[in-house]
Length: 150
Image (cartoon, rainbow, N blue to C red; front, top):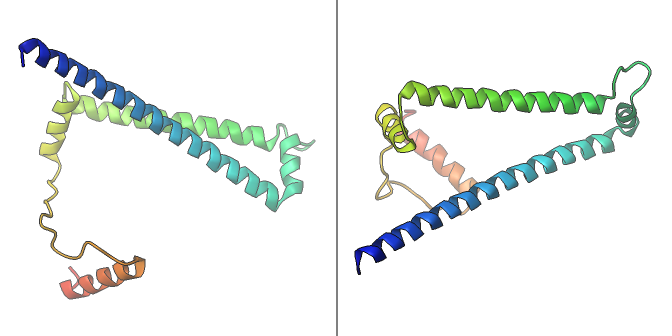
């Protein structure tokens, strides 16, 4: 294999890896958006089913209300989403800048040096297969009582 073949295969591999990451990101954003819409829609349907009189009153508004309750709730949801994304973004960006990292790999190494290491469980020291949730809970209860409450 010549050097050109090696360069071409490396370049092709990097492009394929980048395409995969873009597709994976689009997929995750799509799944998140759909799940948020389904959750919000299910909540609205549940409220409509439980109390149709007050729900329709909130949709149309009334003399005692300055604006319909649904538009007020949607506005609150929008501002809450904006504040949550902005706050999380500022927090993550400030941690990134305070660490002094230049790249994601550098950040990972710096955080790996600061945070405690998770020990490897190889070979597993205990049960790893359970027949159901009850079996798992019994195992956890028995292992805690055998540890002496550590």
